[in-house]
Length: 133
Image 1: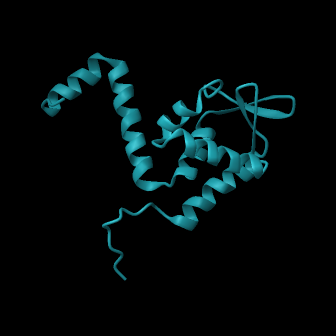
Image 2 (image 1 turned 120 degrees about the vertical axis):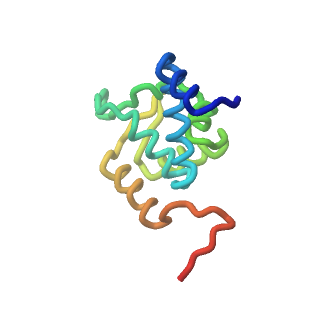
């Protein structure tokens, strides 16, 4: 779809849903350019973390009952990758899944993992990008 910038601005003002969709698309594009898949998944989990506990575990708000295909779509990957990454987080004791809900077991460790991934890998580099040094 193509239109002058002025028209896009009008559409975003008239249609709040369109404005939200454009904002989400912009966030996804930034995340894809800057972060690896594990970091994007951890950020998604943290973004929807609500801190309400049940049975000693904090549950996720809005991610409840979402299929892994949808989670994958939200972070720009595929279901198989999300399954593997959730398995890694579960194996590390950071999350647990019960009855279609994702629970955070170790919030501080999950936050640390997000920070470590960003520090260790830095922003993702495009394959053709050269590092000057």
